[in-house]
Length: 217
Image (cartoon, rainbow, N blue to C red):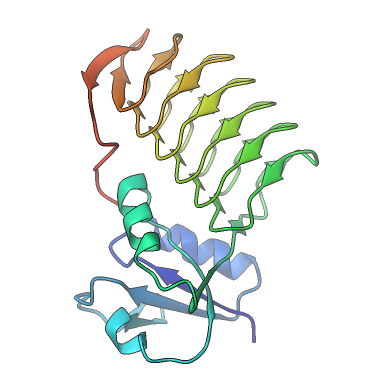
């Protein structure tokens, strides 16, 4: 039986992740509570298991982490024992992906109606939410999050752990540094340094020396 574990019960994205799993043919979906404090035993009919109770199983499992916040997603993934947890990628069947696009097989989640153009590269443990539009020759680096309705124009580069919020627009050939944030609705016309938050139309620097987006999951 094809099975998968979703690690991170505190995610608001859990229902979307379950939907993608179901549409991807997983017959057994198990929800793993990494904080060991989730009050329910089932969500949408699927079992919730605490990580502490899972620790002694001898098998290796396939999993994804549907936490939208890059910082927390990375923390959870880096805390899992590699010999027991094998990351896989999930792609909603309605996503439109160019044949020449390179998508990592390690922990990527791509939501409904996302579009990814030719020669783009999607790194490990990235999350691309529903309706995101990613142009040609774009690089989305490890652990980045691209939220619903965001637009990344051609030849843009999104640094590791960065967060592109809902409806943000990144103009062509723009580089977004590591652990940086483009706020909701921002129109980014200039390169953004590491650990920087930009917002507005056009986007301007609002905060430097950030440690990445720390919002809700």
